[in-house]
Length: 509
Image (cartoon, rainbow, N blue to C red; front, side, top):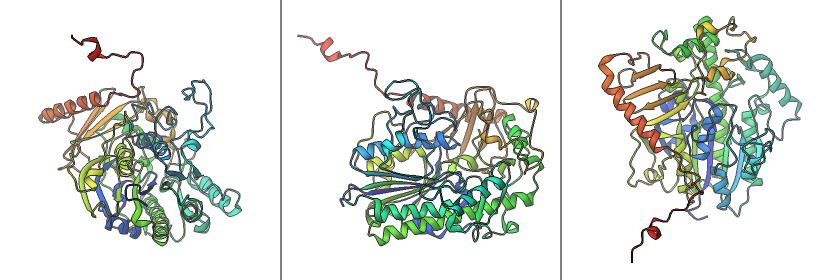
């Protein structure tokens, strides 16, 4: 295969912060297969999602365009079929495209889409199967295409739903054999694709998308007992007294005000075990690439769609906020023969993956893509890094206040309210975050704000937004954010209502 047409494997987990890996400083989590990938690739130390929730993050990543540009403001929204996506461009360029695992970005023919490409209101578009040649979906729990009728798989899934899905801190040891759980089954599906289903006459793009370590927080043995809760450190305490009210609302609606440290240690231990389960599946996939002689011709990327606070700031799961626990994601890229192994301290956004992958594949980057390719950095060529990263969150509307709460979970295992981050009300109130390597400024539509000195306060505990001594810092970041708004103004599609040819109009004799 030509070095200009590498195979591409994009491995993505769901709801995994960078800090959950030893590669990013975690004191106890060891993932040997990701470590091996890192030893022959580049570890990006400052990679950030562009929205701290699944669908907006995945949708912006797959289009290379910001969530506000593509109007994907929350988890109940998907990619408009009129958008141009990464797998679509690769497929049109001769790649065989495959999705194995979680989608939550492309319409799959089950939802009515009033903006269908045909213009027919109410059409149920299936862009998933139009841009991917091979689809085997797996969602939260344990149901995976090809195994959904297996009684043991069904039992594993039902146990997860019954014991660990509805309450804020529900967690446990799934009694199913690990071979009947989704992470293992998705790994097996990837092996089957690589060995039997791929077209050997074409390069392939595989999006291997694991639903874990997202909720439900549960894992089979031996992973559930891999970490002892008493060995799991806790993040520093944050009383949230100087933070926006939405954070105190989430703290209460997650029942985190009634959760003890031992409970949180247990949840974190299960979360870590789920990560090791994924790591083992990744190890089987990379071993298969080696066995088939594909490794040297394959660009491999590993990342996540967003983070999980895992108790930091008195919060659990994901929320309409901008702490690094929600927004900083792991990113490891291996590009044999092109990129030397090492670590990179530049700022990277997930919207940068689409143009990077397309450039590596020798494909034209579509007009309107807002991400910045870092392929030249990988090749050791001149590269101008980002000065800052921007993250968006929230829908239009006024965020819920503490005085408006009429019902809340009574304890961390209360199933009466379901988890707060799944409610649309939890995402009301737009915000934008701009962060450099030294500072982070979060601005909200309702006038609230946060400023963090990331060098002196990496845990983001002290909000400096109201401190007059930092007004110059705030003003500088606000100007950069204004420039970002102007740069990201959508230029795609081009306005076809007018055709101005100034050269002809003002041509002189």
